[in-house]
Length: 160
Length: 205
Image (cartoon, rainbow over all chains, first blue to last red; front, top):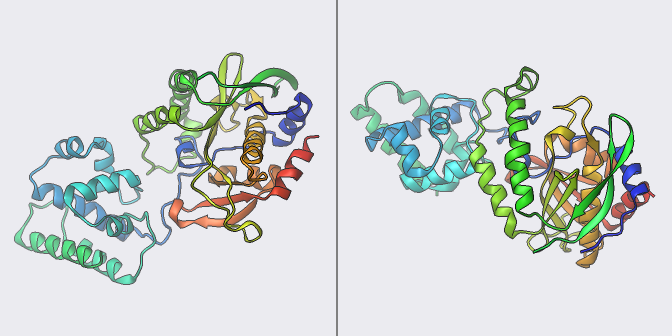
């Protein structure tokens, strides 16, 4: 496809463009971006905590190390570490899909929990708060945690 | 496939002089190689530099492997690139089949959706002062308009802008912002109508 563009037009527009940033599309995001793509603003730190703890407990339930899980779901180790330990971390949508597939969790609900989709109602958020409050990320998986985990997974599945 | 090449010019910011360049109707192995061997090392250096790190959201995770894989996938898709001094200066990926206009006056009509547009690191003022070349964004937008016209879409374009580029799409391109898109990480969605496309072309004439 040949395009008619004069060099004079190019230069006039270059002067108008100046030093403007031009990036568009999620693929254009890089570490130099002023702002990362914004996760859903409604997603709170509590939701991120619940998401991180859910992944940690599901991983431990299967007896997997972080490295094992990273291998199985084809995600970088540092992304899983960030999900589990950094409440400000915004997970990549592909990562959430991979984790949902591996742990057989409903994708839409997991995306909401991870702050990547708008919550449909308060019920999931309220359950996430309860779950975050009940679970302890450093202790061994106690029967209570096991029960909390299963109850929360059941809630996720019910909202599907 | 050999891409069609259109002669263009970029503005050398340091000396305010034009330099001959080329608009390629395609993204080829050369662009992917340039990205891997020239763009990426520059961006990685920037990632480590104090000035840029200060602007980053500390929680932001970055995965170079994913971006490399995505770029390799572009070889099969419709795109444009700008080459100057035998180095890729800008990249754009477009979709002519799956998106429709949302702006009221054009609702439901076909448009060229810009999936991805990016400037080379050395052309970005956030990384280089002064940046090397100016004009990459405008020329790629002009190419998108030309494609839209060729497809019979009359210049209609849509894209999701990164937050730092919103100003370019509003002020320089005269596009209409339709607000943040919750399905797209809350990036702002912009559209260009046929009238705005003509105004954009007239600006540089």
